[in-house]
Image 1 (cartoon, rainbow, N blue to C red):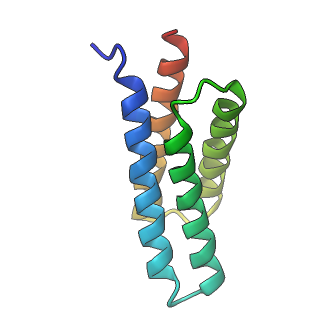
Image 2: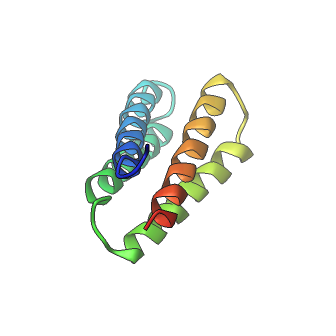
Length: 105
């Protein structure tokens, strides 16, 4: 049923996370400029990976695993609020579909 759809789901999740982090960054600019800039940079990285996700490069796929893993670690080591739990669930879903996409080949 998911044959061929995994890559679209992964790209959609990354695009959604890109927009989410850009919005979080813009909101945070009023409170802490550096943190807001870092959040927007995180969003731009998700956007970059969503754009190049269709590439066949193993290096890019491993970089994406490292990037999402680092985001999971940063989410877990921070104060856990409602938005952190939502983002953590999205990261776990993203990792799951990335693994499904890699093993389906």
